[in-house]
Length: 615
Image (tube, rainbow, N blue to C red; front, side, top):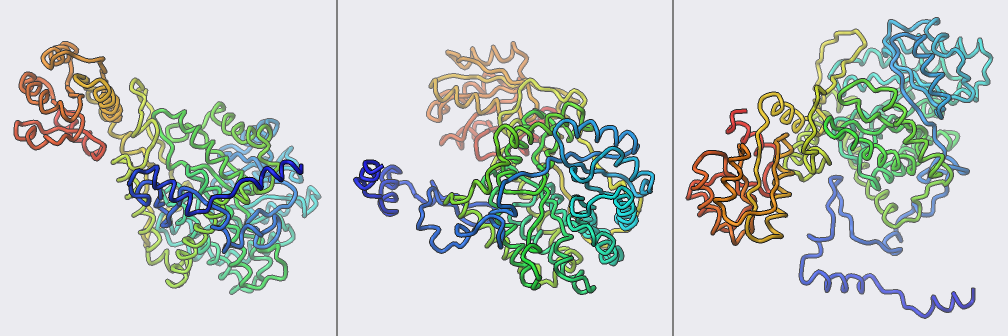
């Protein structure tokens, strides 16, 4: 040990400036800020490296697990979470049989979703028959107008069975504001039920009944900082209303549960849950609870549907697994992994099994459930935690200045904000500034939809309320490309032929780029090793029945090849040049009008090509 300590002292630790000097040398004059500093969508910069000195002003590294402000988690001994699966209830008996089956496959949490007309003592007894509620978490979602009746039925069932009140863990998903946010409907009369709902379940300390469903914002395309900032304001709205109605803060806070989404940004999502607990604890603390335990934030995390795709749907498994890892390491209470196929069909036994096993793999085989806050101490994660907390707090304060979350929803400012973000993200996806593997980048060239179509989800509550407020209107990020690709399949699938010539490296790179570009619309692409002359390439393209001929070469050689190829083709197929060469103006003057390159709007370009091809 002495030798090792001596070895450590032989080296002088480089300073931050020395690191920066070395980086500037390696960059060879390139701008450090443009090349290596990442400007996030969340509104702050991320540096390429962090050192201990960067955390000198932060308090989060000094926090302890299980202690206020709970940034490092609600527990001290482990990081275990409930593995949950949701069940849509059409027939209570069938739902119960399914619940009992999947409980034997590793789950310890269930979510039952059913319409209001099924709320009855018989439904409750049937659903819970054979399920031991002192070891299994149970969650319910039904019509908000009938949630109070459901709570009363559940309490009667718990008492009939003689359960220890401390051991019953679960929730009722009661969030009338969600319908206002997402559908613009006025549910303010239902808010008056909150104190009665809490009073009904007051003797069950681990059964929560007021929810904040920012999972809906996540699935509508909200950025991480937006989901977090609005979650805080949303939760505070309920706290304020409950305390104004005479509910004491300890009881009110302990009845609130957050249902949050998880997007694909791995480290930032991990940091989001740490920042969420930190800020929520600070908010509750301002109400002066008797016990710091009231400041704990209980979160159920659900992997996102916003980035799921209909084409190349198995890639959804990669997305959801990354998201599940973020949530698990972030210290959530429970988690639902969304089955990979729900974008185009009802989940199957196979997809549900895979979704369960994704969590079990992390929890049991990768031991994610054993180590408390494994991200603690990482300079990068601590920085992200602080940065997200700061930016989301700005959103929270802005909402409070507008009169609170409910007032902001009625004014439509929150809906406008999320809709604007969704629109921007769709625009970024169209330009490939935001990648969706298998959709707008590296699509499967040979895949067909085979009748798969996007699933639409309705409300299901049976009430046709008017919509006096603005609503959030959102589609999945891949939807625009999927619509285009399906339309191409249904009308005519054109053939795009790569006329590769000249510089070997450039023609191959441009052919690969062009194949990926055009396959995003479902075009059949034909790559080639290279041709000696443009005439040979054009003849081969026409023999192959090409609708599009893409010239792939180097910028310098386009001046030599493009115009002869265009003239020889003579309108027998669409002519496209892969790239944006310096001679582009000369090529346009010769009549060449189609160019594809990294600055193109891929979606709009492909729509234009479809129109030209009569598709």
